[in-house]
Amino acid sequence: RHPDRFLPRVAVTKTKTQSGKSTVEKSIRNFEANDMSRVLDFDNIDDAPEDTTMRVCEGSGGSELKFPVRHISVRGGLLFYFDIEDVEDHTNGHFVSYQAPPVGVIPLDKVKVLPPQGGRRVFQPHASTEARNGYEFVIIHQPIEGEATRPPAFLVAESNAKRETWIRALDLRSDVNKDTRLRNVGGSRMDSADNTRPTMDIGATAVARTRNRKARRRDKDGDDEEGAQEERDIEMAKEEFGLVEFSEEKYLNNFFQTNNDFEAGNKIDVLEQWQSSIKRGLRGAVLEQYEYFVEASREMTTMGKEVTALKGMVETQSDMIKEMKNLDFTAAFGDGDHGSLASDEEDLLENPDAGGKSGRKRGRRRAKAKNKSHDDVSVASSLSSDDEEAKTKGKKNLKSKDDIDHETEIEIPSWLDDVGEEISAFIKESRYTDATDLLFKARTEVNDILAQHDRPTDSKLSKKQHANMNNTLHTLDKLAEKMSSRLVEGLRRKNEALKQAGKRERSDPLSLMAPMVSPCCLGDDSIPLHLLVKLGKTQEAATAYAARRSLLLLESLHERPIS
Image (cartoon, rainbow, N blue to C red; front, side, top):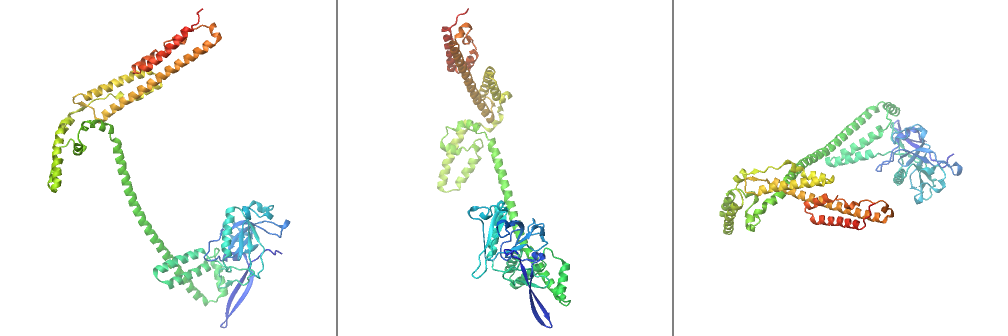
């Protein structure tokens, strides 16, 4: 009925013993729905992709060609496709249950899996079918000489990524030259018997991973034979009890259907041996993981110590940065003029940290010089003589510590702290007269304070206060320059505007009918001119004054009659 469809069959081999003689019975039966959970995958190969849905090409061609949606599953060397109505939870990957045999299978031995050429989504003959909405690929049989050729199988995935994943998985299984087998149940052994209808085998990557862990543990313990037996026991236990839908009642019924009561004791011994092997395997795995845990704990402890040390270094650097921010380099450089005339040797001898201390450090230096060689003694003696000379000069230039303690700081008015901001605000508001008055008041106050500091009295400024006063003077100078620039620019723009207005009036023929007084006659520039002179910008004030008077003369020459 369907010459292009393959259906799986199972070859069953049973061994029976009667009267001391063993006989082997072989039979072939159809694949059933509950056989799907027992199909074994190949060993030493990547895991099969999760079960999914794809469109499968069915029909001989033409109008009979259809692409129904099927549930797709790969086990061993076969690709099964089911009717989605016969699969419960068909969207949950491997965790599904099957209610009916598959619609068909696609053998994967000696095949080549290819997508359409030229980057197309579907093959050209299928462009007008339902396959055009997906990503198609084909499974082509490549038979050996004398073998019949199977027809190609076309499948359509939902996305290009899924198509690429399935192409790689099917290519890997096409290179494995093995039959697909079933897991043993109830003491019977199932094997392949028909090459035309391949049957089935399950491997598991979990078993492979267990084998690798066991092998590492055997190498460590040196007990190869015991490790090999333990591995075999675990594999046999997984094959017999590793079913997804394992039932104790079914297992007991199947056992006593194929075995007598006397063999139950032997089976119990085998099960206890498997249980012991599983316990030893779990214990070994736990010990192996515990070693990794101890090593990771040691690394975390070391890392914690390093983080603590790093935190301490960061805190130290933060404290150093704060101290550097509090240093007043301007005041330090301003107060260091008294040592600028000293020679290079005096600079070496006069350490800033020891400038005001007694001669204890020099005494220790001379004591050390006595214990050195002859050359060192000669050098030390020269340094000592220079030190005495530096001490004499230091008494002339530096004050003693007692004198510094008796000095009193000069009181600075609090309004000087915000004088710069207030002047800036006046300038922004174009209140240039108020800004000029406050500027000169502040400048006079600062100059008086600095003059008081320079007098030979006990009232002195601290280094920080002295630096602040110098900064205030610098700020006042910049504000005065800024205000002068604005005044000059305002006068220039006003004179230019008056000049252009006079030109427009003279060019207007109707201006004679409406005589008026020229705005050039107004003295609105007197205040800015006085401020410029007060700020010391006499040249700029003279230029603006001359420009306005030139406009006034020009208007006088073109004076209109007064009616």
